[in-house]
Length: 168
Length: 171
Image (cartoon, rainbow over all chains, first blue to last red; front, top):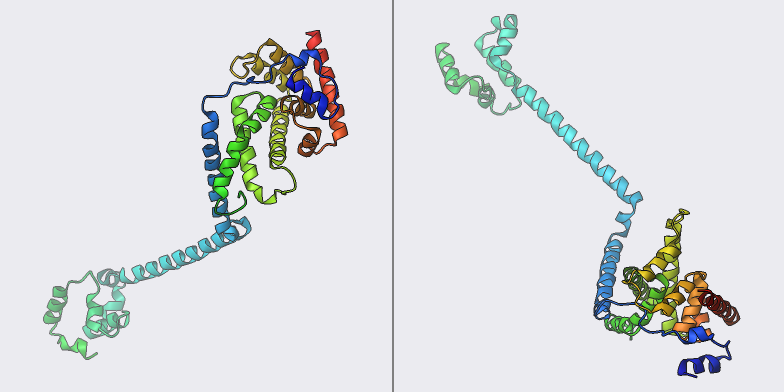
């Protein structure tokens, strides 16, 4: 009787092992790749480390990771961003529309309005239509359709004293 | 040592080195294929690491690790069998073919017959037989691993041996 069978019979008074099983060699039934067990601990530790890192990242922002918080926060951000973008565009358009007024085009479009208007009244209209009431000269000159020289020539032809502008 | 923070990594490495071969062969006998076994062994030790805090010192470390390993192997086989629910494909047949392919199994004819006979047993009975016959564990150790009473294990092992004996004789 070999060592293994002794274990079976003495340990817990077990059943007799059939003869056919006694003849089976129990070792080296499954081939294992060479040096497999040398690399296994480090392979396992790499995976353990990767999982630990992932769980740390998940714990760092636990509240934000939850959809019920993240979705409203992102939605609010977009609503606020859209509000600012919309209002910024609106303001830009208003400004664009104002500065886009061309004096010559306006005079052509409404000749009856301007034909009885003397030069001083026209200057006053221009100044009062401008945002920059503190600097009337720049208000007039800000119309890009008229060059500085044209204005000076115009004043000269009409014998208008430029000093008049500063006394308005 | 394994539960201390500073030496945890080192201790875990030692633990893997200590038990890797036993765990590997326990799982390999169940799933036959090396790459499946490799995955399951890694999963087993990852679970050991993750649940180290819940390990109760009153039970043996190796029986606790064996319990995790057997659960991994059993749930793997159950998943595979659910996937092979088509009547034409039987996962036991897949395992049986792996015994004959020359890559997964290097045993002689008697050993091959024994493992083919083992594949006819229910998985838990197979586990009991393997732990008793190959691992030579005591019944109370197997009882701790599988959570089954010693009496039930003795009966299960007895039935398994009889089935295998008959199977080998008929071949």
